[in-house]
Image (cartoon, rainbow, N blue to C red):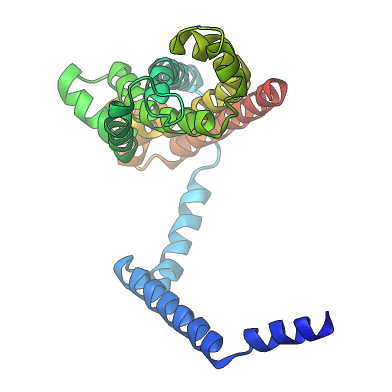
Length: 266
């Protein structure tokens, strides 16, 4: 055993291994160097800008509470957008996930098209979708609902499909052996076992979409983001940081509620 350990240590210390390690480190250094350059990272500008941030923070106190009812209404719009968009996305994601799961898809020829569609939906952010729908349906929260729904549809269906592919198909095959149709077996044998994790994933996306939809007002999709943009345009830092504080409180509460619900489901 000692001889085997010595051989293993010698192999690790071999010149070829050291050369590979050096080459990997050089490639990583080059990649991060290029990223640093293309991202235009400038620590000197950061040092110059930090005092400005401190000045803005000083101007933010005291917080503006006179418009709190308006902010609460806008926050309600944001939460409504997130809830409706996530619900629509989850309902659309479930059948798409069945098509995009290699082990249970009833139409194998649609497996790759379904995956490509989901990749396309996931690749376009809800912010971009909302911008497009503002042009199609006009300003307001409805554009935000559509933007959230499309992006979350692709993302949630991808996760659903991964869960399905990683699940054991024993119960499914047992029901199939009785002569039940494939879709019947999926509905009654596979999905009940996966339902807790699918609901947990949906809760995660709802929580995520509440945070994401706070900025959709920047493109005219309504919600608290609209007031956030107005405050930034007017350089009204007291109003701006009041809105940010409200967002943080709501997101923190939702995070706690969502975490508690996920623990109950799993």
